[in-house]
Length: 389
Image (cartoon, rainbow, N blue to C red; front, top):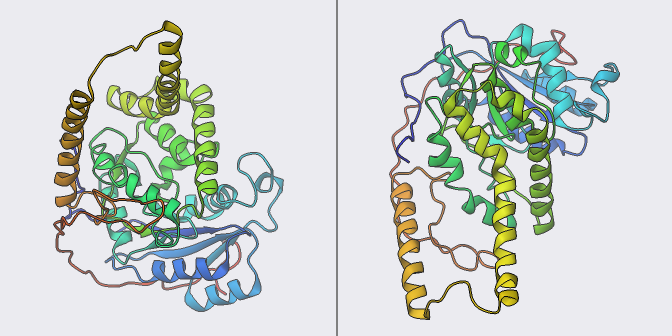
């Protein structure tokens, strides 16, 4: 909290910066969902010219027609070589291969900064202005932003629970990693400087490409920033099974990175970045160890024939209440400052697994945002990276 920092509101991209937004689409993702994201991308309030691109593995005629009509470029690897259609990284039928092909054929040569989003993440009108502002500093190679998966929260308690549980993480905690502490990109959306991403060979490997990209960029000497006000709304897990599957995939991927590229990259980091990114790499082993000890402790007591600690119920409740009160106080301060993401995340909620949350009535302070002029792409590029419709 003490280090939390919001990028200066006066930062602006240099006028000559070539800017683009790109959204990926896999065959499993419905076109109406992607179309809603594209509409929001076209309606950004920013006083800087930018292009909008769709990185689609196999666009249909309706997709091409809509994009041509609205000035959206389409980059497709449908007829690309085997390097973009393999089962290993960058894989097919997912955003990795689509983004890799977009970067190789369009991004590196045409643009200086690219903001990339998942198909289901709809950016707010001021999103592009906020996420690109830190690139005014030449040493910034990437900009992370909050991952707010709230579009299906009213219908999914798994999505709602994760949304509220991670409100501190996607708010003040990541903001505290600004100014040299290497905030972590979240895969749902972030922005990169193309010369930086090209210098490390493209997006990082494995399923946790967001973290591996952060790690490799930081090891290469690039600074990162966290734009706490760059808001895009996405979808969370629909069921508990989806949530657990995601956690399993993330933990496996982070462990893979820990055992492969992690040690080499970690040695090239500054002390601050070593501390933070090293903790991220060790997060799942640390949590697993704590949970294992917690489950083994009662068994140890049974084998030893006595409790490992003695406390009466009143003393236990008192000690627990003091800890909970301190944590609650921190949450109240952070929420009242508008530093949770989402800003209206409840501090206390009851029965979140079965009922809508019951938030504690603490209103966050919201700063005024000045609306800038609206500018749309002036020319459309359809099919690969050719000009025209």
